[in-house]
Image 1 (cartoon, one colour):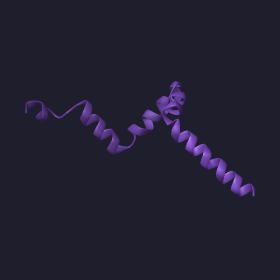
Image 2 (tube, one colour):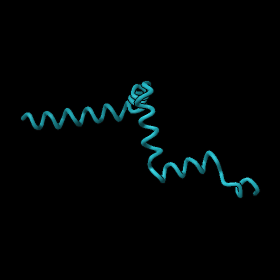
Image 3 (cartoon, rainbow, N blue to C red):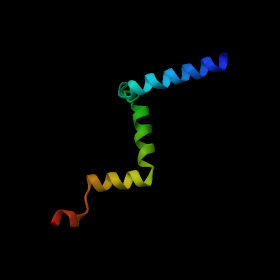
Image 4 (cartoon, rainbow, N blue to C red):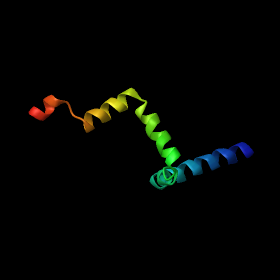
Length: 65
């Protein structure tokens, strides 16, 4: 019985967190340490870093066209 209750509580908690995901992200990222940790970990992923750098600093050949 306790295992079923814990599974249900995890399910309800996940559903609630999904419904309020943007509010939860705003609460987490209010602290500068967590925000810095998240940005540095995302920028540590090579595919994400390359894509962001191409969007922010496009190659020069794209500017000429």
